[in-house]
Image 1 (tube, rainbow, N blue to C red):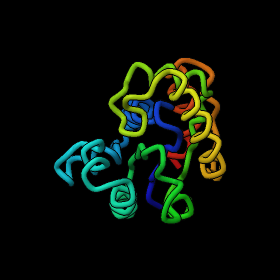
Image 2 (cartoon, helix red, strand yellow):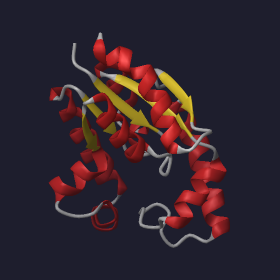
Image 3 (cartoon, helix red, strand yellow):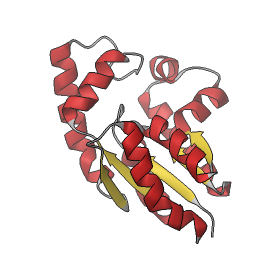
Image 4 (cartoon, rainbow, N blue to C red):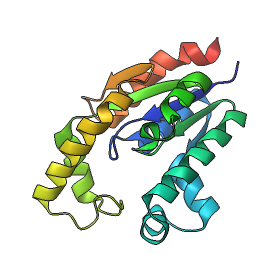
Length: 174
């Protein structure tokens, strides 16, 4: 049986950080779906959004996601909106193990304030960002909660990885 672990969660939840570290500890490969899209399309996500629009991006995202079915022994960090479009959540649940990194709004907002390169939050004021995070997270939560495993990230990311490692090591070995 192939091992594919899909990490889900809002932007800033730590999917790439946790995924990279978890994959390393479990001796698995790591794939960041956004990086795959950027490399394949030859431009950053922000440029894809601004030149071709979100509908184009979401369609491409679904196409690249489905290509991961050919991978084995891999942790895949998905984009924040990945599970919300084109039946992607059901597809990931059928083709791998899905894990929702449930991160509180305050932590997400703080992380996003520091990194404003994401196309959906670029140029927003603190108040706009606060409202955006609340509204988007509320809309996306039902999709995230459709993951097979939910994990509340209350501790620093390093502790999250250690805790997830002890859970997944049995899954990877069996």
